[in-house]
Image: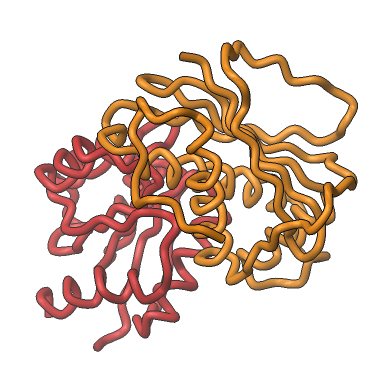
Length: 128
Length: 161
C-alpha cells in the first residue's frame, strides 16, 4: 500500500494522537497527518491540502462531524478520500445520517488498533 | 467477577447497574490504556483531587464522574499517549476527560434502546478536592470503586429521573 496523507478531526488532541498511533499500528503508512479540532478547521486544512483518508469525531464544537461530512461533498481535496467516523456517540440515527451523507465507516470508542485495521484497510484497498 | 448480562434496560433497578458500569469502565481501561483495573480487598482511602464529569441528557439524565489523584490521572494520560508521565503536561485534563467521556458512552450503549435517546455533554475536569458536588439527583448514585495501578479510582453515576 502506498504512503498516504490523512486528516484526523477531533476536539481532543489526545484522541487525535491515539487515532494516528492506531493507524500506524494498523500498518497504514502515513506520509503526513493533518489535525483539526473541529469540522471548520478540517475544511480549512482541506482548502490547501489533499488527503486520501479522513477520520472524524461526531460531537465537536463549532462544526460537528455530521456537518463536516456534509460539507465535504464540494471539497476537491477530499474527493475519493474515505471518511470514517470515530466517536463515543453510539446513536444509530447519527450513524445512519453519517453514512447517508457519505461516510464509509464507523468505529466506536473505545477501540483497538485491530478494529481500526478492520474498518480502514478495506476502504483504502477498494480505493486503490 | 460475575459478568452481568450483555445489556440493561431503563426499567432495570439501579442496583443492577453497578456491575455493568464496572464492565464499561474496565473495557475503556483495557482497550485504551492496556491496563487491567483491580478490585480493592478492603475499603480504600486515598487522595481524590481530580474529577472528570460528563452530563447525560434525555431518557437517562444525570452526571457520570470519575475521581482519582492527579498522579493517577497523569499516569492514565501517559498510558493513553504512550509517553512518560512527566511528559503529559497540559494533555492530562484532555485525556482524563476523554476517559470519562468514553466510560459514559460505553455505559449508555449497554442500555438497550438508549443509544438514540441519551446525549452526552462534553467533559469537564475539576482539579482540587475541597468541593462538594450537588447534582439534581433523586436517586442513589451508582458507584464503583476500583484500583488503577493500586491507587483508588471512584466512578459514580448520579441519576435524575
